[in-house]
Length: 40
Image (cartoon, rainbow, N blue to C red; front, side):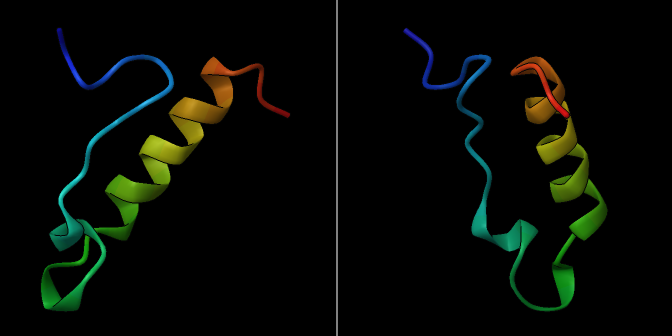
């Protein structure tokens, strides 16, 4: 059984903390989830 599905995405905290923060990737994931849930 996987821990990820269309409602859940496990990300490392490295994606949002410190110099390695990848805000473009986080924003992309947020948009994908919003669109998958019916979005605005």
